[in-house]
Image (cartoon, rainbow, N blue to C red; front, side, top):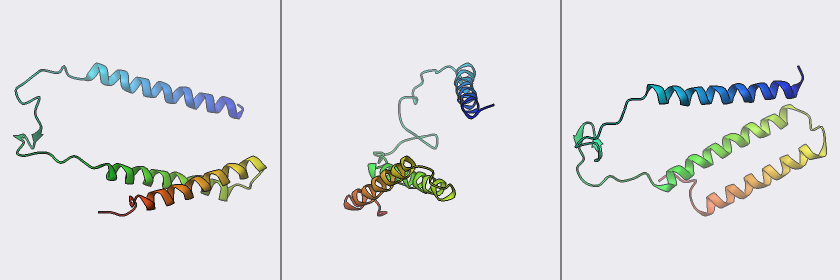
Length: 116
């Protein structure tokens, strides 16, 4: 099998597994029954007291930045392991590194890299 056939096979199998999981969860879920406490917030089975403080945007922003840097580490590791075969690979690595540096400066300016 050539590389394209293997890639297409993985994409099809991945899509089938995803749709199968969604289909099975739809079949196995319980029907929703309205109740008195169903509309309110529940804390450990008791009624909520006071206002719930939502998770701030900074938490999600920090999590997204973490994922970006994890992908950056993986992406640069792939280039470190493989030799640069043509100029387009080098160009894409350069664009990625520049984007990463811009992201670091942007996050530092917004002070989202600092835990509070």
